[in-house]
Image (cartoon, rainbow, N blue to C red; front, side):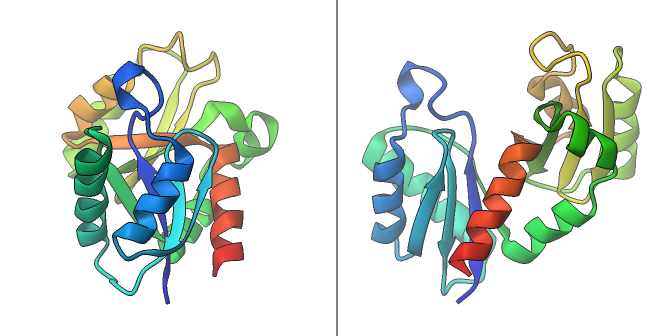
Length: 182
C-alpha cells in the first residue's frame, strides 16, 4: 500500500488552530488511512492509503479535521516518491548542510506558470533566494525567516496558489518516517 506524507497548514500556531497530534493520528484511522504517524506538533503526518488519489485524500482529511475538530486548514499530500524527488532536487546543497533551519520547502496546491515564478523572484528585496519546481519551492532565508519581507502571503500572492512550508530538518525527518512506514 502506498505511503503518503500529509502537511497541515498553520495548525497549532494560535488559539483556534489547535490540532493535537494524537487526535490527528486517530482521525487518520477514522477516515480509512492506515499506520498514521505524526512528527512534531506542526501538522505533519505519514500514513498508508489504498486510495491513490492525493487530491481526494487532501479533501477527506481537511473535511474531517473541520467536522471533528472545528479547525479549518489546508491539507497537502505528497507520495513518498514525490517527497524523495523534493530531497534529490534540492538546489541548495550547501545551505542544507550549513544552515538547514533557514532552508525551507514550501509545497504548493498547484504548479505556478513560468511568469509567476519570475514574479516571485522579482519580488525579493533581501538576500533570500528561491528556486521553484512544479508544486514546490525551495526558499533560503540567510538573515532569518522572522525578519524577512518574503512572507508566505507574499509568496502565495506572486505564485497564485497556496502552500505550506517546512524547514530542511523537518523535510528530512519526514522522509525518514515515511521510509520507516514503507
